[in-house]
Length: 425
Image 1 (tube, helix red, strand yellow):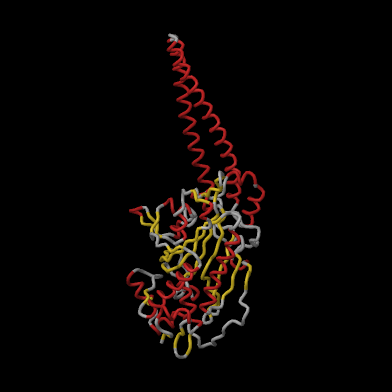
Image 2 (cartoon, helix red, strand yellow):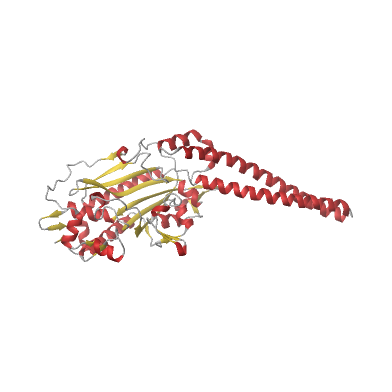
C-alpha cells in the first residue's frame, strides 16, 4: 500500500496516477479522507503522549509528597492521576479506531503507475513494447486448435477433469504429463542457472500472507478459500515466496534476493464461454514457475529489464513467436507500478495468448509486509518484483498448435532431454 507521507508530499502525483488508472470517484474521496484521518491520528498521538507524560509526572510527585508527609496533597494528585488514566484509555481507543480506519482506506488505493505507463482504459490500449520481428506462422485452414490435438494425441483430458473435480481442471496423461514435467524442469533449470534460489512453498496461505502481496482485499473473489481453516489456495507462487521476507530487515549486502518456485496455481476466474476460453486458454488450475526479486529501489528498474530478458530467452529457446506489451493504466494489476505482458502467437487460433506478466511493485507490497533493508544506520523499504517464467497451460497450447505437422507435434529441441521423445504422434 502507499505510504501516507508519500500521499501527503506527492498529492498531485498521486491524483494524476489514479486518474491514469481511471479509478472511480470514491477513490479520490478516499485520498482526502486518508489525509484527514492522518491529521487526526497525529493529533491523538500528541495528546496521548502529553497525557501519559502528565500521569508520569504526577505519579512522581505523589511519591515525593508521601515522603514529605503531605498525604492530603498526595491524595489530590492521585485523583488527577486517575483522571489522566481514564483520558489515556479514551485517547488510546480513539487512536486505535482512527488507525484502523486509515489502514482500511489505504488498502483501497491502488499503486501509482510509473511515468512510462501509457494512458488507456483496457487491453486495446496497451502499448506494443517489442513486436515479433518475423512473419507470423501460417499453418493454413487445416491447422487444428490445441484441444483437438490434445484429444488426438492423448495429451490432456478435460472431460476426465470435469468428472474428478469440475470444469477447468485438466488431467494430463502419458506423454502430455511428461511434456508438462519437462517444461517445469526446463524453466526451473533456467531460473537456477540465472541465480534464483529454488523454493518449494506451501500451496495455501493465511490472511496476512494474502494481504501482504495485495491479493486481499482486491482479488478475494478470484481466490479459493478453505473456510474451516481460514486459508487461501495460492493464485501464484509470488504470494508465499515474497512473504518469506515479511517483517524482515534485510542486510544491504544480501540484495538483490532472487527466488523461484514451481507451484500449481488456483484461480476462480474462468467464467465466460467461447473459443477464446476453450481447452487450456483459461483454466482454474495450472502449473507455473515464478521468479521473484527483492531489490534496492535504485536498482529495481534495471532488474525489471533483466527479468524481461530472462522470460524472452525462454520463449526464444522454445521457438515460440512472442511479443511484449506495456500495460496501460486501465489494464494494470492493482499492486503494480509497471507491468509487461508476454503474448505467444497461436497459429491455429490466429490470436495472441498471454503467457507471462513481469511487474515492478516498487514499495507497494513491501510497505504492507514491512519488508525493509538496512543501509548503515538507514532502514528503508525494499522494492519487490515478480514474473511468470512461465505459465505452463498456454505454453503447452502454443507448442501443440505452432509445432503441429502431418507426422505429429514436434517437441522443441531444448525439451527433448527432459521428455525423452522428439514428437507427439
